[in-house]
Amino acid sequence: MTNFFQETLGINLIEVTKMIIPILVTFLVCRIAISVILKVLKKVLDRSKLDKGITSFSLGLAKVIMYFMVVLIIADMLSIPVSSLLATFSIVGVAASLAIQDALGNLASGAMILATKPFKVGDYVDCVATNGTVKQITFSHTVFATPDNKIIRVPNSQILNSVITNFSETDKRRVDWTFKIANRKDEERARQLISAVVEKNTLILDDPEVFLRPTVFDDSGIVFTLRVWVKSGDYWTVYHDVLEEVNHLLDANGIEIPSNKLDIRVVEKR
Image (cartoon, rainbow, N blue to C red; front, side, top):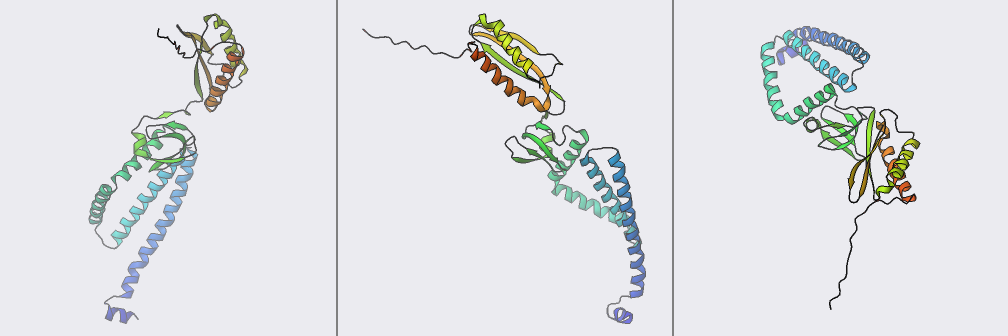
């Protein structure tokens, strides 16, 4: 069999075997070593309590680098000039980067988002692209669930280049209302009714203290401004509850809320 390959194809099986076996052994040893290193690195990153996205990215990058080093080692064993191989990789890398520059931009933006943490999974975010609850952050795009339960995937580069408003980053938010009454004589009564609604609502925080003051006086009446602080997750519940209860109480106690009126006069021609 050896003579057949040597005479027909000019291949010396013994020499090929002597060359392949060390390469296979080297590859297997390197693969086992990479597996062990990645497991140790994962444990270290998990203990550091870094974001899951950063951990995943770091492990993937480490894996690529180590396998690239294995390729260089095997190339050296095959007597392939490493400098030529690196030059080839550089040319291929430049061509690939030009072809997928948008994808690379999103990749870099995803890394920046994970590093700077303008938001995390579960936060409600408003940006130029969209607004909604963050469901997933990948290296190419971020997944949002909108209030009407639509799933939107936005490229990371668009998000990073926009103004980002994170409504969940802090544990407390301020809720503002304005209530207008038509008759200035009802000022004190309206204040008492609004205060009663605030005191009744258990979701409103005592600190910072509640702000309730008249802020506008004009021909059509008085405007009360109410500001309270709540936990971020209770914002909309408190907003709608207080709005409904105050309007109901004002109406039930005969306190008029001003509205636009149009007087029509009919003039008879004589």
